[in-house]
Amino acid sequence: MDIKKINIAVDGTASSGKSSVMEVVAKKLDLHMIDTGLMYRAYTKLCLDNNVNFLNENEIIEQLKNFKCHYGENNSIFVNDKDFTSYVAQYDVAENIKYVASVSKVREKMVELQREMASDGGKIMVGRDITTVVLPDADLKIYFDCSAQARAKRRFLQNEKNNILPNDYEDILRQIVQRDEWDKKREVGALKIAKDAWFFDTSDLNFEQAVDAVVNKIENL
Ligand code: C5P
Image (cartoon, rainbow, N blue to C red; front, side):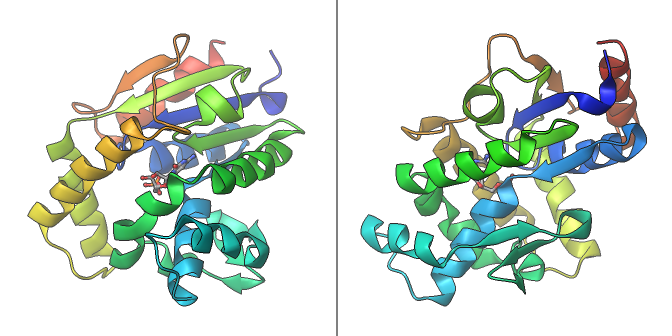
């Protein structure tokens, strides 16, 4: 199989390492990684900037007309040509993203944009509904998982490194557990394990071991 032309779909729980691991895998195999969570995060930031009432679905949908998004180098994300990358990890964004990610009309638009991006192959696309909705015919589907405690610890250390505040372990754990629940329960684009996905548990692996395992899997397709 020509690795340069394949598409790899990756889903998994919040902070399971899927984006950071797949970013390094993409570099090693000369593929292009697209982290679709950034689109939902950027959309939530746009809603916050425009004082959207998140309990009013119509107000969230209204923002579609203001949402022109593109990726830059190194998974940076731009909305209406403004760099939103530094906002996507904000507390308010994480708190409110569930309202955005459960709106069908928003998801439809995201799915359409994501399929366009993957149309010429050579992509590793990472998210929650990539293996099941966006690219169900991908050449390889991976489902990442990891214990909630290990994930909260990783996110805490990542925040510390990137000077993201507030940074409280218990609060991060609560957010992770809550986000998983929302992601798995919502009516559209819910996080599910596709029946032909490779279930990859990273709880007991360090970063390098996880990268090596995925590279090995892809090279043996
Ligand atoms: O992957 P990340 O944690 O950045 O995603 C943030 C949120 O965006 C997720 O909790 C999920 O609700 C939403 N999301 C989604 N579909 C995707 C990617 C992310 O609903 N394909």
